[in-house]
Each structure stands twice: as C-alpha cells, then as structure tokens.
Length: 417
Image (tube, rainbow, N blue to C red; front, side):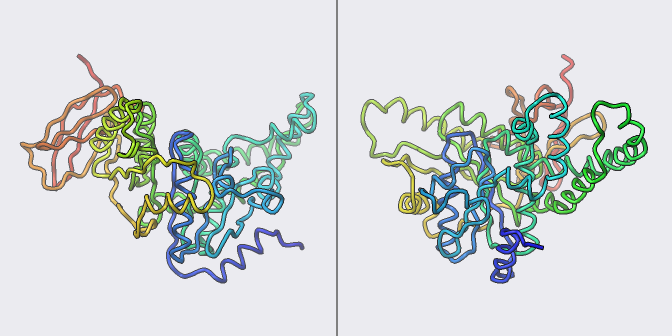
C-alpha cells in the first residue's frame, strides 16, 4: 500500500524530534489585527533558538505563506503538508480538499450523494459537502498526531478570526458529548431500520462505513481537549489593536477562552503609534490609542499587555518578521510558560451561577462588587478587575460574595428589582 506523503514526513520528523514536552501557542484575534504576522514572527524566532517549530494556519483564508513572502511554483500547493522553510522551521496550511481525501472520505461521499439527489451538479455537490468545522477538526487531528509522535517542540497556531477560533477549541468537547450520548443510539437505530427505510426513502440512509469514519476520527482526536486545557502545554495569545471596536472583541475572546478552560497568558497590542510620530495629523489617534491601552491594562490585569509599534513598512518576508520578533520578544523565549493560573472560572451551582477568581492577599473589608453593562467589576483596595460575562450570565447581578483562602466566589442571580 502506498504511504501518504504526510505520513512519511511525520515518521521522518518523529525520528529527529526531541523528548521534550511539546508546547502549543494559539494566536487569535479579530481579522486584520496582524495575528498572522505575529504568529509567523514567533515561529521564526523559536526556530532561530533551536526549537523544531511548526507554524500552522487554521484560517480558511490562508495568508501564512504570504507573510513569509513565499511565491512561485516552488511553494504552490506544497504547504498542505509541513514544508521545511529553513532549519527547524516548518509551515503548514490546512487544505480542506486534501483533508477530505485523507480523513473525511466516507462522510463527504455520503453528503455529496444526498445533494446529488436534489439535482445539484457533481462539482457543486462536492463543494457543498464541505461541512462547517471540517477544517478546524482536521487541524486538531494534526495537532494531536504531532503531540503523540513528539514531532515538534512547538506548534504555533495561526487561528481564524475570533468566532471561528472559539469553535475550533470547543469542538473536542462537543464531539465527545455527541459520541457518548448520540452516536451509539443513532448508529444502532439506523442499522435496524436501514434495510426497510432505503426501500421507501428517496434518499438512502448513511451506511455503516459512514459511522466507522466518524468513530475513526474520534479516536484520532482522543485526548486533545486535555492538551488544549493544560496551561503547561497550551497558551492562548490574543492579538489586538489599540482601537475601541477591536478591544471589545478581544474582551469577548478573553471571556470565552477562559470559559472553555484555556489559559490566556498574553495580550499583544499591535500597531501602536510610536513616540517618534509627532505630526499633528495623528494627535487624536495617539490620544485615543493611549486611552484604549490604559483600558486594556486595567481590564486584562494580571495578564500583561505587550505593545508592538506600527512599522514604517509592511511586515512581509524574513527580514521584516525578524524585526517584529525582536520587538515582541527581545532575547526571551517565546515558548516560555508565562502563566498557568486561569484568571477566573464560571460555574453553575444549582439554579445560580458563580464567578470564581483568585485574589491573593485580599482581606474581606477590601472587596467591592458592582455590575457595569455585561461586566462584573471587582474592586480590591485600589485595584479594579473587570470580568466580562458570558451571554447567559450577562443579565445577572451579583447576589453575594464569599472570600475563602484567597478565592473570591461571587454568586450571580436574576435581577428581580
């Protein structure tokens, strides 16, 4: 049997990989904030430090190869598998058409056959058979495989814009729930009724190979949710710009990554006007940016907000990426674990909801609480923490608070006033 090119590469890489625990750095943010450039610069810096690094694009609108300024037939179509750009640095852009042939063949074939019965042409049916989530799950399959085989020291994930990133990290738990509660019943039921139903139904029910394909995919994903939620392995870094509209989306992303159990260890404010820009034309821009940056520092504390200046030229190609890497990290290790403590957690206690946050050294008399829009504001002495609330909790108000052993638990209830 012919071996897939990717499988050969995995085996070769595995033989050369170190025994160190792999790190995953997940970069997310609103579209257009520069996260691809930051991810590429991070990968380049890690490779220069001697770490075997894969920079993987999970964004359907891939621009990672463009960031490295890869052009011409030499690179066309070759980034769907890890492509070695230089020593220790690999690039991969998930190609959904290839992934369907590798991982989704039975599922895609069935969906395509159903669409054809409606009169849709072959090519259109194959395009429509690309279901939402296939690309993200394909990327997770690779992440889990590289982790199991210890192929790389660091994987840098250049994720899609925020909403798709949330879907990406929530999929393992969603699939786990489906496999435990729906899959066995659905498979058994269809196996029993398929012979009869296929005689009278205009559309054939999915064959058992369809379910076998799902089961095979699930086995390949097993354990990836624990990997994503382990702060010693996975860190989320949110890229933003010092603009009010972008900040709001970054705040929402911060809430939802925390809600899904991932650790955000750094906020990167990109394209900050440098002090050398003193032209009066940019005066209001500077004032607006400084105001937003101060708001960021207050909102995300104790997670630090790192500032990256707006460059005079487009960040494109190795030299510009190295310059960005210098501004981002200096001599530091980009893969270093900055934080392992989640800033807060959300829980449901009976009919109520609770927010728990660690407040070391706080005394009971120092704690104050109030609601501001969709945020819970916690005041501890002269410090103030803004906690964005998930949609379900946004209409609730703080009912009571309890401080025990450095953990503040705030119970949230419906506002009956």
